[in-house]
Length: 492
Image (tube, rainbow, N blue to C red; front, side):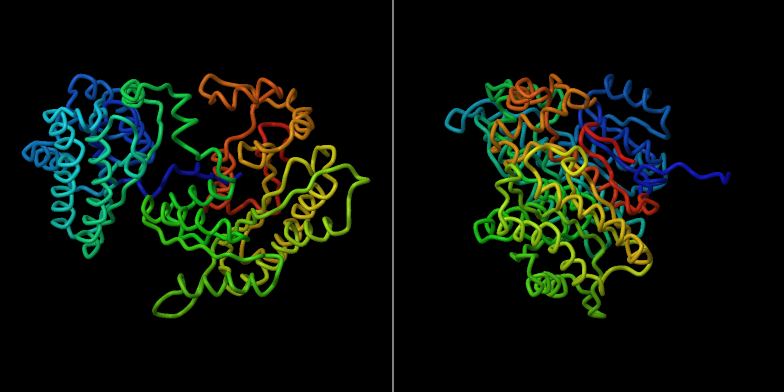
């Protein structure tokens, strides 16, 4: 048996030197930990000396890590942070500018000017100073490097009684765009991410400031779990650096598609376009490929490579066998089965030739467990699974081809389904190990889960499985059905 190395966590970080500010707790601590697990050398920075020193000592079991105390709103402290990083590890390759103060708690008409200045100093001037000295060092050592500024959902969507915090987080986006312009010629990439609710002390304090609970905030302030699986998939892939083409079929979705593409470009620095096309028609699949050529072909050679195709589009019509009509059959098989055939065929000349391509088709647990009243839908999904087994041979030198078979997912399709339909799905919940409710589930999820014997999946859970199959590490998996349904059915 050959000695096979264990797959690495984010191998691009191995051996790199990174600064993480605000590292004593929450997202900063988690970032430092994952960097260390990936083999990076980490400098943890925080104004909380005792707490961060203890965390650094705890994480030292994972790799090379030191703690440097710094108030990022002070230029001398940030200079010292960068200097000590270079003195200890010889260079600086990456920085995550995460440190921030808990949001303010007064409306704009009553805001405290001193606290306004304090928030601006830490949440805006601090990241600006970090970018300044981090970029100086990266340029000094010959260029190249990566800087990530941590924004917030408040960078785009204000929350009550947070005028200073919201203003600072909006400004972080502008700072990031400007820094990217200055850093670009030197090979320094500067991006921002804008997280929503996270389980951390700062988030808990913010919820108190807002006068709300975690459950109410998730339900009212975020709609992520309400978007379709497709939106969750492109968010995941964009976060990993993929350029994106969002396809949808109707004019009513134009605005949502446009907003999603803008979000991807701002949040992840990728290029994203949308194309309205009915994939059941050959000429409209050709239009998708033409758009890919226009926007993503190599500007010097004119060549296009399509690396990943996710066949997620589909329609569902449910009803008893005796109610099946020919028109429904023809339409569902045209979109759910012929569509993937036509789009893959149109893309075929542009797939890689070194097996690095990835094709993932969204099947359904219905084709395995035989949920009642899904004759047409389950048939189309079973067809995708069969096609994957065929295509994995035909396309072996071009791409892997796999299917994923989710069960119920907390999307609009599931939420708007009748109770009778939810009951048919719930029959299988009793034997599924992962559908049990947890305290962290939202009130809406718990309400539905208590009624129907367990929760549905969150869209990001399904998107994560798609991303795994699209990774280079999944290159030895093809022609397979990967179960992502909480254990309603198992892969085989």
